[in-house]
Length: 271
Figure 1: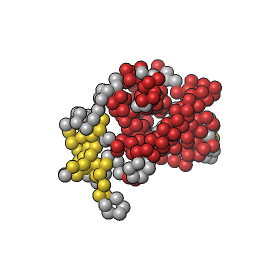
Figure 2: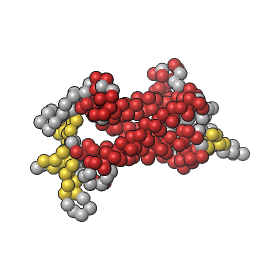
Figure 3: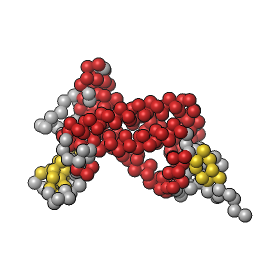
Figure 4: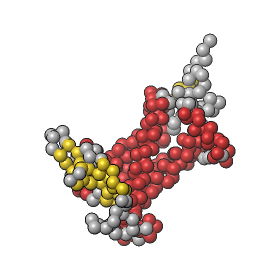
């Protein structure tokens, strides 16, 4: 006789609220940030940066087409980044195409309004999540790493289990695996705070109030570079997260992030 499907309460209300608020905030921040980047598609290290200074990253276009430059190395990105063709058939130049920005088309003032508004949602959403996690002990219960979990043998075993599409311990399906913990810790306690504080460093008003921010990040242009790198890492995390959601059971994961309930497969391994 087949073992009946079990259901566990996996995601607390605070986590679910933060997840969906964050999903919207990150979407708007990335697209409005792309529009802001289009105003000056070059990144520098240090305090200063202008058109004739040496940039470590540049996205642009010339007579040969669109390109991305990393230091002295150039990569052809014509039709994707730097130069692309719009729906009306006209060729446009700019780091990111119109479909990838908010607003669609060049409008720096509006992009900043979108970005600053949702930056507040992003920052206070993190604060809400951390406070809720202290009360419901989510961080202590689900994210704290044990010494045995970071042993090389255990980490390698976790990688092998992921390659086999086995993402949960059948004896403890409610627990996060080690790779999950490491990725969530990196995002929650490193990437998001860095995004927030480097964003503050880019504000002249905050620099006047907290001048130590410029010293902390090595100058305004360094802060802008770190901000961009963290945004790229968050994009990588989101894409990896979506792949894992699909691989481990899309509807089951979606339902659990709406209702909190997660169904355990009869085999006991999870979806």
